[in-house]
Length: 96
View 1: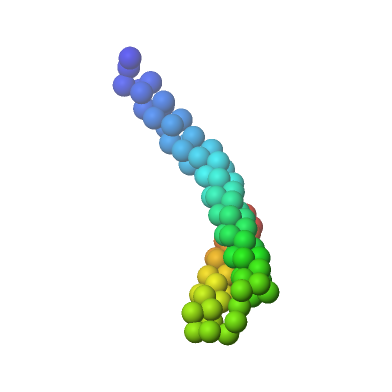
View 2: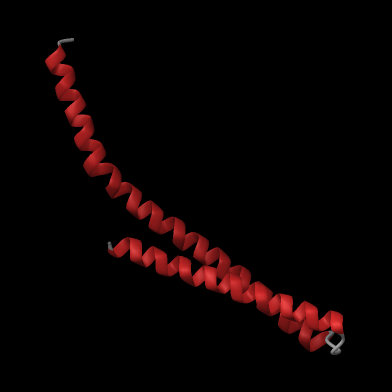
């Protein structure tokens, strides 16, 4: 193998890395954020349904029940925020 041939192959490899790889990475990052956004929104929905079922069935106003509902609300807000922000981040990545 001659030295000039290796240099041409290295140049082709650089061009590949510069053009093709970012075109593959960008949709993969978008999909990653969309999948995690969906996952966290599903978890938030499950927590909401569990909290409503608890409130309608077992809630009596005691300190422990208030704490359980407040922790459920906190987790729903946290998971919901993370889910929505993941979708917004995926949208921002896909538009850039």
